[in-house]
Image 1 (cartoon, rainbow, N blue to C red):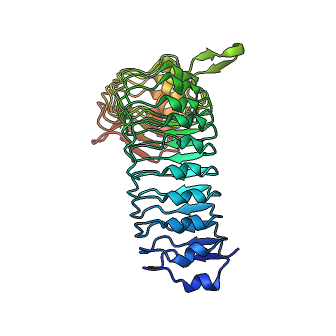
Image 2 (image 1 turned 180 degrees about the horizontal axis):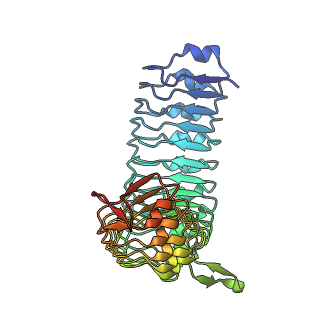
Image 3 (image 1 turned 90 degrees about the vertical axis):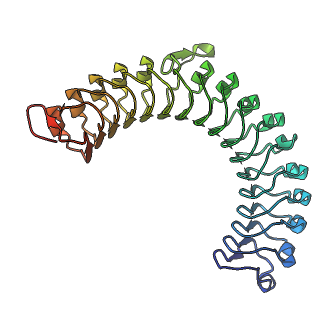
Length: 400
């Protein structure tokens, strides 16, 4: 395989004599230079499969790109390209296309004729809409559209039944388009940093979804259909306006044919910090696979005793709440390595907390503690303790 790699060579132009010496080049990497124009000779390389032009100073992708009929991958990200040529439609074998961080503004209709595309990256491309027939790209597995000005998605995207990752974070959506419910094989959905006020019932159709990020939106409540996401392992709801969580989280639910499953039973990471929660449902103790729980900066006055059933929980952040006491059952979280309860109103720590065999880091700063349990002396895995800004006594013994 003939490969030309001139990345990070401080080039302002492409040496054309290389193409004469190697007319059968299959891969060219010219990333991270200061190239402003592409030579005509480059577009005569009929056997070229991969073209890397990221991080240069290009303002135009020449229409002659259509001559590269065997291209499989193109990366023109991080340039100053203001528009894509209609002729790109002739690159019929193109599978991966990255035009992120360019002021493109519009996707040409011809782009939707690239029916072999599986990975498309159009982040930060000044887009405010997609072509109505964008759904023709039905083989897509990855579509990234982060940091644009999109407010809706074309209904034709209902044909994206092979799509596994969709990133529409940092756009201008005020609602999650219902067409997302048609993406039945979706595994990752990023929709953070928009203006979404509620999630549609169609969200419950994404039974293969593993990762969902809707943080930094305007969500005031959660749809009950969220409970149907039985494959979900990571759920990010940070920085919204939530007053409560679903009561049935962790409960047994019945589907068709009397099949029973635990609502969100596969959840491993749950982040719901910076909301207005006043309590956590007791059923959260049924999330047997939960490893990380982040509830910082809410209005919690207590933690449910059922939290002690979370035997796989390794990380708990509950800083900046109104907690006055800690349930002794928390000491049953035998996998806990990091426990942070900073900036609360805690007066006493149960002795059982000192029996966590794997606890390495504890932050109790800015509470109302005067002493710590004697059992803390037995925390053999302890690496860091931030208890108070003054010496803290253990019950009946010396300072920790």
